[in-house]
Length: 293
Ligand code: GUN
Picture (cartoon, rainbow, N blue to C red):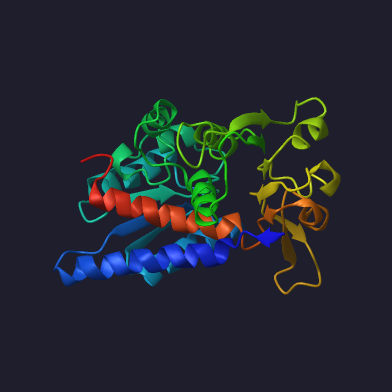
């Protein structure tokens, strides 16, 4: 069994981006700029946005954190988005999810200018993904593809079973893994909470992805011998022995799954850091106007 070390792979990708930024800046041009909007004070969201800003600093990107109170109205938030849409110094930006209940997530994600939508959540970018056109791919599925590429994971003709059908992870990943290019060409099965006999499905998986957000949802006996196991889950579970008061637990029971797997992502240190690298890659694409010249 080999670990799919997302932390190290993410840092390597960031090193590559840092070299590109140094070249850009040495030519007298400005560095790429990512902005992140955070509404309210959800602890996990704060941590994620903090990690994104820190990564920008590491690679030499400019970054802006827009922090708004939980009471911010939808109209006010859209006004801030319009400002970022029009700011020529900002190449890409994200609005961290989840948002407070009084805000309509779809209205917000579709207010972001598609050419700056480095999260790839806008309807136009989701549509382009479905059609196989170049676009911003959401950070988690893109991070998983980059991790597979880094470890030369063979995907062609493999059975890829994805557990979880969210519109930001499971569903786009199912499209990407079935595309006619590497990493893809897999036979994809998208499982979810209404799947009958989940174990029967997961035992067929050469590549198994857990993306339900439920700790240890998939036990070791549900993993096929030799499978490539990718765990997207990072649920905070109360743990008094930790200084933070919690520990991070994946969707796939690590001990049992690692005894069977050929490759497996740890939690933390697997998919999580790769999402950061993916967001930075998308910001570089936005800066270079690769998808919206
Ligand atoms: N919340 C959890 N994952 C994400 C993500 O990829 N982007 C944003 N904006 N919010 C998130």
